[in-house]
Length: 154
Image (cartoon, rainbow, N blue to C red):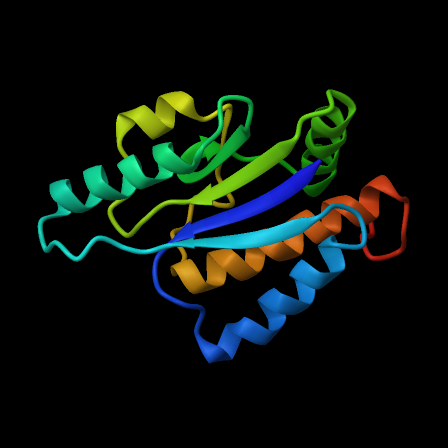
């Protein structure tokens, strides 16, 4: 199974780029993993922005992709529960698991409905740059849990 980490937004800030790249490289020891940067809309109208960004996402998605939407209104899960989810999808021979960080104004209903799972990292709202880092670290942590490695401590 390939893991894709998608984000709508600008390039990673230099301050977090190195850490995100480090965790992405670590994930690659377990699953092929890469980032897809979806350019933000140039409009100034939040409705137009959300719609155009969501249309782009829908164009990139394949019918059998397992889509996890990161959204503060989603379900909070533990790191071990994320590991179980990864393992379940790998066991189902899913070709791709996609984690999507929406744009500044969120995503349209069509993305919310298409998502197989909506995951909340926290009730707090974080800047996109920090979410990228948290996402990469948590996916890596889930991988180490699956292999019973020492990175994660219960």
